[in-house]
Length: 478
Image 1 (cartoon, rainbow, N blue to C red):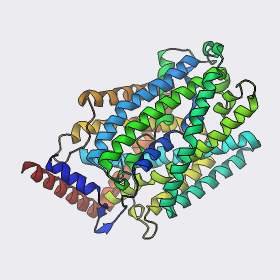
Image 2: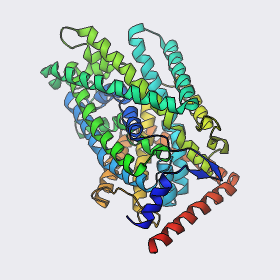
Image 3: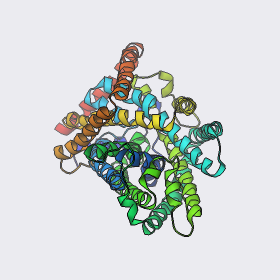
Image 4: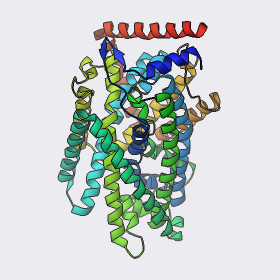
């Protein structure tokens, strides 16, 4: 192993340090890293969006292909993330990679887009999904559904903010509990499908073809987003150079298999047009299981509640680390970078994140949230993968795991995502333009505001990074 890699590995096993104060410490093992990825991804995505994907792709076969290809696209992306994470095992994910590439505005935009477009949005979606599946049993109206969603956000915020270790244990347990019945659900569904449903007429208003398939793949973005979750808390994972690659690669393979299997079962159990209009699509599909009918739908709804609750817990647990990282780098409000002296969690960032999620629960619908999330997430992913071409030439770049194929694999991560961005713009040009202008246009003035207001902290952090890079370069030259 090169000397620079040894230094990186030594640094990865100690607490992160900023401004002379101890920050977040490495308390999460391999199991927690895997649980973060699987527990976050296998959740509201499939239980919320399988109907939306069916309505966009148009036919049963296109729906299955959308989930399969959507998962396959994630393989090169996760390989790219794995290499970047082992090179820079810090909290913050793409915030760190943009910083190391020297793209300060994009580093800030990463956090800005997370807060305003994806992270609280994700919490709102998952909480509403749990509440909607509960309403499958109770018949609750919109007001009660929203109240239940808000109550769950408050509960999990308190758990992960005040008792992080207990929250991590809860996350491990609920992920283990939900994966086994999820697999059984897929197996039962596949055994009970009706062959004619795979040849059912297309959803009204959809013309099956390449365009509908691409839109279907884009619609799976919410379902598959979250596999890279452990990178957001990479600064809190023990032995990251070993545990992160295992967690990421294992997550992408398992989730793709599960999602493709469940989507195949759903469109085989239920006419795709009915699936596309259901608020609880998985439960609706499994009502068609022979002999047990409604009881099967009930079991599917119960599983959905358990699975999505696990995802909600996971999102609240890790997402606030992005804004926390921005704050410690100087590109956010400083108070968001505070770590509670007793709880050892970024409590200010977590409180703001959950507060905004609660506002979204009141003010928006699931489909609106999903559409906005998809576009911004795709754009940010493309830019993130481009950092690999810049940082791999730096003297402080010493990943302990390298993706096979190098440049070719990085291109495979970028090109399909670019195609999905373009497809999304073509399908909804006005909405896409407004979303992009709002996200980027609002970021510019705040970027310059933080550069001026936090100039001293930004200079301090830059000096720290430059000193570390020089030390690594000197060690490599010896």
